[in-house]
Image (cartoon, rainbow, N blue to C red; front, side, top):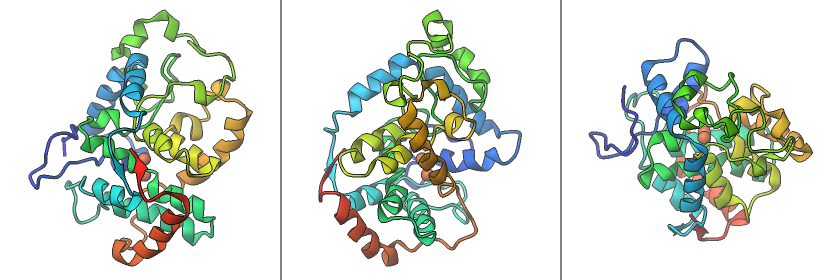
Length: 276
Ligand code: FE
Ligand code: FE
């Protein structure tokens, strides 16, 4: 239960990336487990503005691999949480459960598809990125940290905390500059947004890009960095969030049964090969 480094193989040879779900669990009750503290201490200490910009350089050329979306989901599924095999969902099951909950409520097909692909950026773990650079809540770098960010006390270990340019309310940004101009901490949201950008409608892209930005979509922080478009689109991000929560209420989705439906949806919006 103390595993954090996603690059460390687990006994069955798979990789673990259980933090997203565990953080959701922990949101419901205090205090956070030691494992969550360890994770956020690393995340908050190492996600500097320079780190974020370097990762964007490294990954956003999308020249690592070409694969179909379903293949990418299966690839992601080799990443399993083996801490509690009786109750946890696999990665693909979480993606399908999110999509199915959206579908059940009668939302449009592109919204369902956003649910299906929203965590595909976690393939970063399979390319050797540590968990603290893939999952967890995201936050703006280059300006003052909101005290409402989860476990914000660990920002004192971030070198940017000692840089006065980055510690004013606006930091390097202009008021209402728009989130597109803001370097959020690096992780699976930003990555999958760029993968999907040519193919999905704007509300879906906002859901992908900001689903882990809890300080904004749950706490309403950083409104001064948003422009009018962001404010309008965040209604979709908030709507999406309720479907992204780990739920034990519904039976595990059956990937074999659901695959034809979602393959058709994928085919409607994405080409056969997508750049990662
Ligand atoms: Fe996620
Ligand atoms: Fe998710």
